[in-house]
Length: 231
Image (cartoon, rainbow, N blue to C red; front, side):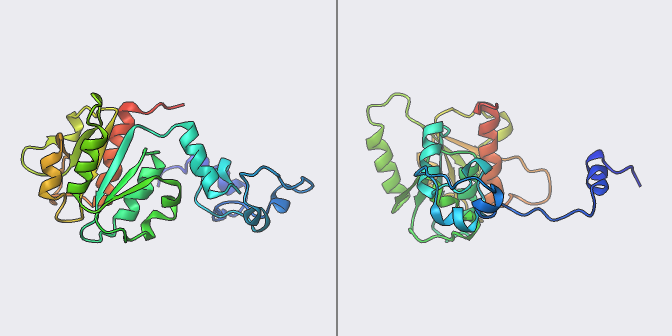
């Protein structure tokens, strides 16, 4: 067996490793002797009971709207995400969660308003989500909104279909809408029809495609690799 990593050795030397607990307890326990913050961005209930949400430490105890407003103020990224919800795909929640992690400007939900939120882990609360009855309605809204805009976002269909180009060689536009379809059938014919570009993720194993949620994460991260400002 190889030598344990330095990190593992430090953990073992400090005593029995403990499972990490997410979040923080009540303010009075975490900040003994300090008065409760009075800023309106803080949630009184979270200050009292603790904050175990899946949020960055700087957002501990903040109200949901305050977090959403701060993300808008600090600057979301210029790409948007479109999800075709026509098979009630369980991956939708996961895609929304990833869109939040990479600070997508907006999520377009095409199809029924009802979708499986389990995989989102409440991140939809911090994300701008716009609903469209169908891909045809989305395209009509898109065409009207950007009728006189020369630098309109480019519609990029992420699907492994004939004529698509590999993501490994694709230069993502800074302003774009990444379009994702349902697990299995992929994007609808109408979605592929309105797309400016169609891009696929190269596969090297025996399966034709990867999980829809995973494909969305790979695609968004590919955009980040080309455009994100890393501090």
